[in-house]
Length: 108
Image (cartoon, rainbow, N blue to C red; front, side):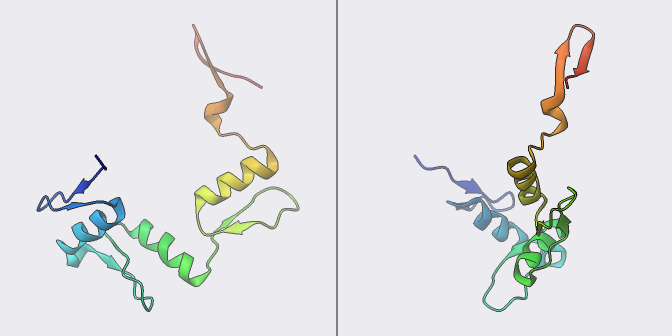
C-alpha cells in the first residue's frame, strides 16, 4: 500500500508530502508564505523554506564553497555539503568521532 500523508488540521490525505504541507498552509493563510513567481503554486509555513524555494527561482546563491580556489556557489546548504564531500573529501564532524569508554574521542 502506498504511503499517504494526512493534514494535521482536517485529516485529508495526500500521496505526496509536499502537497500535504501546501494544503496545511492553506488552513493558516495569515501565517503562510506564498510564492509569487508566475505559474508557481508553492506555499509553506516556514520562512526558511520560502527563501530556499525563491532562491531557486531568482538564481540567488547564498552558499559559497570555503575551499581556497574553489568558485562553487549554490542556493541550498545541502548542495554545498554534497559538493564539498565529492570534490574536497569533506566529512562532517560525526564522521570524525569514535566512541570509547571515556566518551567520544576525535579520530584523525
